[in-house]
Length: 121
Image (cartoon, rainbow, N blue to C red; front, side, top):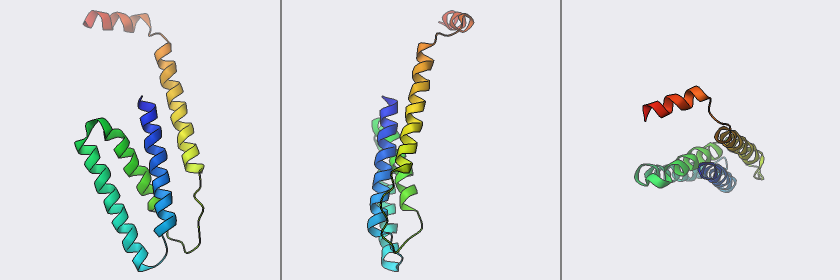
């Protein structure tokens, strides 16, 4: 379903970005180059998927956006533990969106809207 695709894209993008940030985002020129190459490769791979694999386009776009957001944080010479707060926040937002979508499918449309739709067919 659409909600699960969103969830996968957000969670996997955040995890990838945080993992690569933890490994390579040190404050020296070699690390800057490595992070730039990773960002380029990640963007190229996800955008290639977005434009050439229609069934995976939405997850590829989310992977690109959330992965680069986590990877693009300011460098640090201190060890950083991955934080789960952004992932939890996004999961809660997606669950809320799924609930609202589900509620919209359960609640019947007003009679006037149903009549107009029926008359157009």
